[in-house]
Figure (tube, rainbow over the protein chains, first blue to last red):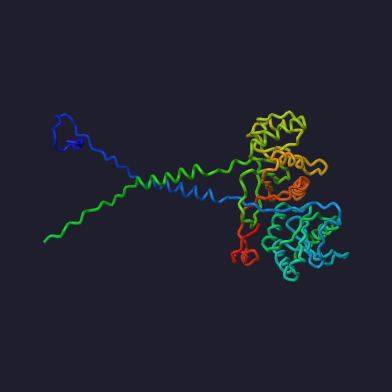
Length: 183
Length: 215
């Protein structure tokens, strides 16, 4: 006989005092283990792919020492966007005039329409967006406005230092806005 | 005539094979997952529509935290060793090269660097450290750090990345950009969280046409 006899019935007889040991199956129900396995798999799949940071490329211009080396832009095609504190955005087209009558205030929600409007009115080769973040604005504001450039496919833009007059203007308009918030 | 008896099939399925597969996959995912290391510097990055995944090799990362403090970290230990030796010879800082190599990030002025390295790694937390001085334009140490990094990499490809906190103010960012410009680093990446492109915008239309993004 090639098999081991595990059955207790039949065959040889045990002594009268020996108890019959109960035969236990070696089969284990693996269903809960599989459940657990797949639960963990789904957990790891979801946690791995969710937080992959992306990178935004920014190209800086080389500092031009002499003013005549700097790029010239057509006045009619320029729109300057200024970033103030508390997510305030200001803009003007062309050159800021003496009375600052073309200095307008906006928000991050509205600036997209302003930029699109400008884009539709200006020939593509003339359009330049000048970004002037003030000392009060946050890094998030800067990234948001750069993102806005990407969203609206504005190819020509520049980060430029703010001037004293403009800082002053931002302060004044912010104060005015705070005084009369209901607009 | 009696019909042929259909053999009774058991409803029990052998789960062993399935279990094997499940745990094979499980171990694969566990081993390949890189958990985010507990960050010593807490930074919440802004969102952007940029779709390119950030590089993870040969990275030099400048971090700006919410108070505008600047930190530098890099992944290549051999380059760190070169930098430590350069610092020791040029500035006589008397740095512990091994500690410099093992440090995850640097956030102290050059004068306080050896004291910074003496702090145990776990105790180096962004908010208690001075950061690399950058706001003073005459004494912008980021500029020196970047020069040091560039000389350590000596023409090899290096990915300069900038990670800023949402709440950090613009002057800190500007001082870092200035330091980059001074070292002729005119191309760098800003780490952001992905965000979907708003529907109806020009970029969205480009995407619909199937044009390749160039950013």
